[in-house]
Image (cartoon, rainbow, N blue to C red; front, side, top):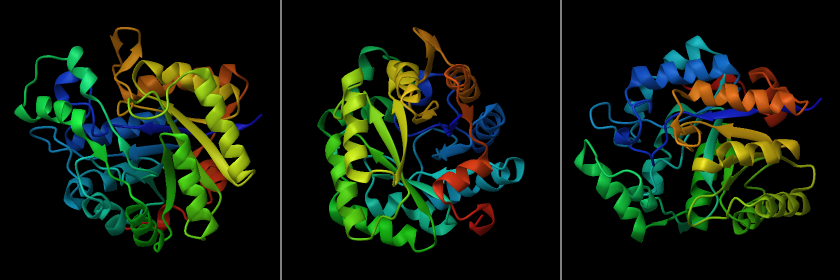
Length: 307
């Protein structure tokens, strides 16, 4: 049986507090959600921070410091810090938590793209905070910058402390961008490639899109990579099921989707983890423990982080 790493993305920067009462916002909520997800079977927890009063994305190290030690103390899960932050932030701001806390794993977006979440305004029309509507509407004219200069900067600044990367690839070109950095020795195997499907501006979530992403990664990286997938919104569980049947790792969480089934909000991150765990195990796989995930991804270990 193969070992499948479940990553749980706990809160993210796209969804806003008015969209779901279950979205973790405060440090206490983020810590509790991450710990519960780990207990449900997530070997990796992927973390953003938010302003506890407004829920607005907050990429200051101080915001992360309010929950990182608690999560580390309560669970052995691999802690993966975002360097995506918010698509409205510059790279210097986005990587500050990674450079200060030196995590085992950090996300890294592999290309600039139209990053559109304004269609959520068709579903959500009432907001508690002024910034929420502007946040969604602003993505109508948003290019999420991840230039070659930005990516190289992040690789050097965070990689120097032994942090490895969850390479987030929203389209086929992002795989080629990763191959460019691999050829120059700035990105080192095993590459942990997180293929993102179904976000407007990136690759779609059709079965053929999933297969095309896998075939391209196989051709570019051979046996030097570990493949994981996430499906945005309603695509979450369907994409996870298709890709897990093809041998991938999977990512779920309220960052990627607020839903547990059609029209029903997920009550927690842990609920999504339990659902995808059942799918993975029904397919005949075993979920990886945190220690197994560290071995698979060649991580430095939780004793070498700075929190």
